[in-house]
Image: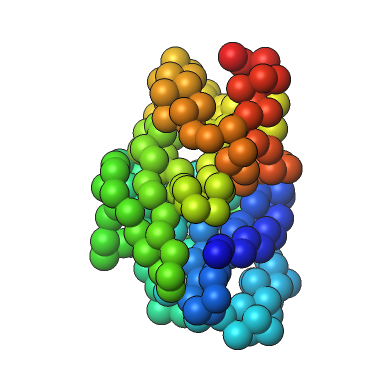
Length: 212
């Protein structure tokens, strides 16, 4: 049984997720901590819950989702894992972060292991299925647990909206197609935990999302 803790960090109100189960092993997904107090908040939660971080995952590598990669690496010795197609996106961050007002970006370490388009990753007694859903970014991955009815969706599908597609590597038609073909086929009761804003469900978005 996976428990999810949501943090909202940085100027973009990005959702950072810690997933853990009864083994106390945990996964950190899209660490968005930019300020020191945000780093402290995440570390304190992990310590207070007695968790053992074993994986650092990025759904994609836009700056607001990778701010905390370096901190997680330095604190827990975990390098990020993401699809190799996101590497140019990550490598571009140091060049544009200062122009966005983020002058203290700690450069993310590079992965030792890249994630495939399909397959699974495991921690504790839990397994996450990879869903490849580019469109917002060139090689975006979502993480799905069928037994727990949860989807860590990154910036693909939001409550009543979808990810923006005007950034480098974005493709509106591709995003719409991937949501239709890969997310809307999941059970209606699947809770979607997005990269920004409140959680939603597949069933609700199929009924009410204005983009469909």
